[in-house]
Image 1: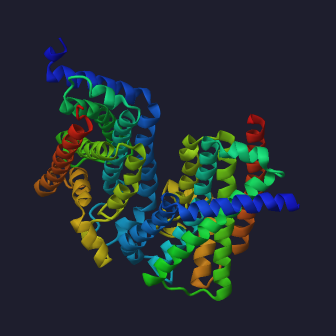
Image 2: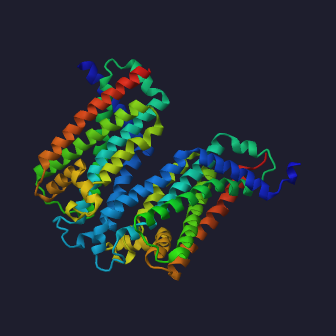
Image 3: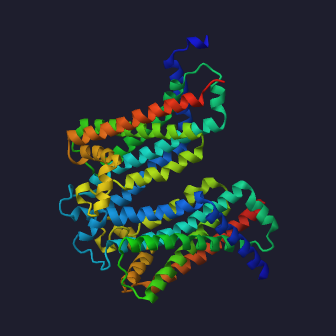
Length: 256
Length: 261
């Protein structure tokens, strides 16, 4: 156990250190969510005027929850890029040779993703509050929202690390981020699910991200809905993706 | 013997290499075409509620949204054109060319040949997908031809910009680095709503001063309005200005890059 923690701590520290000291890594992960918040909450705020748009805290808060969870997911995705980069540079192979407990490598990257997202999530939250976002949820509700973000980040990081370890090249970047991007945008991003029409309504209804998004918006509005289901789905996804990531690690071990 | 080779032949040789290289890298063709279409499919449906906003110009959001893939595709063309050129700089291909009597302008125009092919293919694909999903072109068949011409000119302008970055910095990473900035410019425009319906004042101001708004509105006017002289003049004007300025600066950067020592 101590060997596992030793590896986890080392990899996590390196991951967050690299993020902080390298603006080329840190800035995109901060700028992209901020830009989405500005573009959606600013440019599309008129959407709140359409009939039956009934989200009480307003459109900035409505978009904030999406961007908050999206930044959590992409915090995980960016960590997958770092894993792929480590394989391309040869560092990951040296790490595999030297780590006394290799599953600690995955845990370290996942914790690194979480720490990285804490920076991005904080910046996005501060930006939304400066933009005048209304928060109607209680302290417990907001802790719930934070928990949803952590769970989302955890699941996305496991997906990204697993795939990066299977493919072991930076060229896997598009493959890592595309499913996450599409899954996020197939949820009710711009309007509540009941205002969606056509095929997107059918897809969004069965998209698990919709449940997380509804739960997050409910928590911010102080009227929680489907929170338990959202956590259960994210926990289930994390469990499956943890197995996937472990298999990715095994594949990297076999490749030597 | 080499000195007898005309400028046209020089351009053709470089263009042939550029087009062949582009067509061989299918990933470069698939991703720029597919990604804007995915966003079109999603946003075309997800934002359909926006048509309920009082004063929204069309009843089907897909009609309004179709202009965006043309612009997003142009951004991808700029990245692929710039990355190809940067790779030539990084691998030393340019240094070897500097030893030949090849003219810099021929090299630049030829290099843009690959970008032109991608731009043409993706514009046709976007138009066909739009029509297949029920989008009507208000300006008719002639309007569709003008739309293709405008979108190709826009792509060409952005490709020149990509080449300029590649020549100035000589690195593919620098070209990739400009992509987020271009992406921001697209989203801070009238890409999702008409400017007069943007509620947030500062956002509307930014969109008004953002030239990308006029590129989008030029393309969009042919789809949802018909023949709108002002929108087309602004669209073609900004696209041509982008192409001319970026090409002139790229030509200067090329001369520096190919300086014979």
